[in-house]
Length: 106
View 1 (cartoon, rainbow, N blue to C red):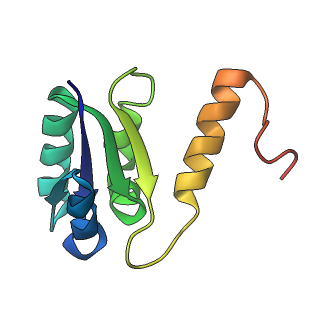
View 2: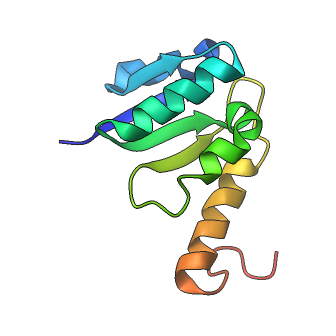
């Protein structure tokens, strides 16, 4: 059975453990890069990653965009919502459907 992971700064992700998700706090980009690849190669179908960390690891996250598993989804962190997560979902939907059915011409 597949699992769900959350990776990011400790303060941003520790609450997800209460929901039964596996949390992986990271403190520097090199550690985060290694952890992301390890999770992607493991039994995780969904990996939530904070927007701030995804921005630092943009190239690494992009490697998995065309893969079926894992789905890497950006979530806001304690520093706030940058809009990158919504933009990523919008881009994926446009690619799958062929047009922007979520937000129209915005």
